[in-house]
Length: 131
Image: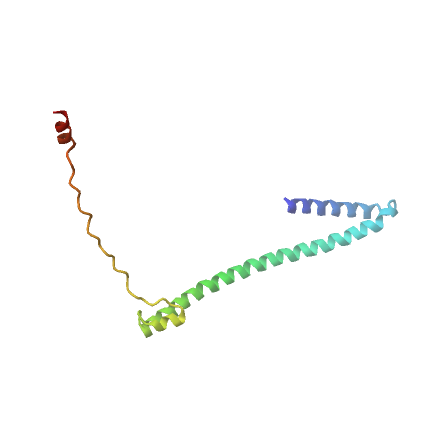
């Protein structure tokens, strides 16, 4: 939204300065400020172009960083695999390289099921109390 307002303002200023220059003989009192406005308009146009160039450069830099991160991840995986190959999966030497050595999985202890509690038949208990 701000970009639209900025473009609208710049367009209005461009029209205003052009119209004042065309009628400069009649409008001597506003020719000076109009020329200053034209200077601001030119400088703003240059900065806007520069900003667009920076934006494009930022996109290129972001893409290059992403490419480098992908390549770096592949190379790091290759190095880690080489270290595991050299020292073995279980070697504590791997910790020096911040690689987790394989220390075996934890054995799950299988607990026996709880003993069953004999259920008292409710119907037998009712029969004895009614009789």
